[in-house]
Length: 196
Image 1 (tube, rainbow, N blue to C red):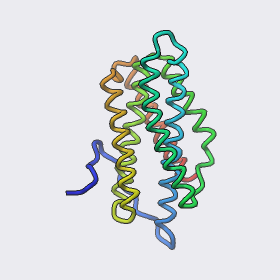
Image 2 (image 1 turned 180 degrees about the vertical axis):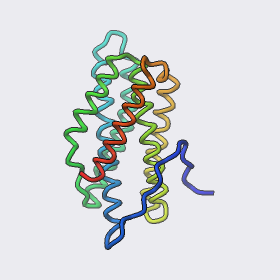
Image 3 (image 1 turned 90 degrees about the vertical axis):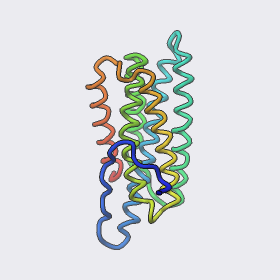
Image 4 (image 1 turned 60 degrees about the horizontal axis):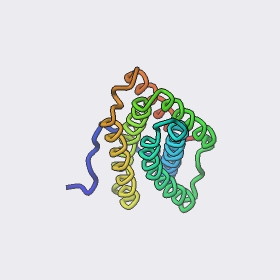
C-alpha cells in the first residue's frame, strides 16, 4: 500500500519530463514556482474575503472561519518560500498580478454573500487538490520528502473544499457558472505561473 493517499478527484496526468540535461530540475522548478504562486493567490483570496466579512455586520463568524483557512495557506506559502530559496528557483513574475487578482476574487465573491465565498473556496480547492495529487505522483519516486509535504498540503486543501461544500457552496446563486469560471481561471493561472 502506498504511503500517499489516492487522488479524491481525477488529477491531470503527470507530464513526462522534457528530454535533455537537467530536465527534472527544470520540471521541479516549474512545480515549486506554480505551487508558491498558488499559495500566494490563496492567501490573498482569503484576505479579500476577510476584508468584506470583517467589515460587515454579523460577519465575525465568517471572518474567524476564513482566518483559520488563511493561516493554513500562509503556512504553505512560507514552506514554498523556503523551498524556492533552497532550490534557487525564482518565483513567478506574475506574483503582483496574483496578489491583486486573488484579493479581488475573494472580495468579489464575499460581496455576493457567504455561499458565493464558499463556492469560491470549493472551486479553487478542487483544482488545487487535483494539481497537488498529480504532483505527488510525479514526485514520489524522485523526491519522496517533497511528495510527502505536498500530500499534506493537499489534505489541507481537501479539508477546506469539504468545509466549503458543507457550508452551502453549491447553494450560491449561479453556482455552476461561478464555479466553472473560477476553475478555468485557476487552471490558466497554473499554466502561466509554471512558465512565467
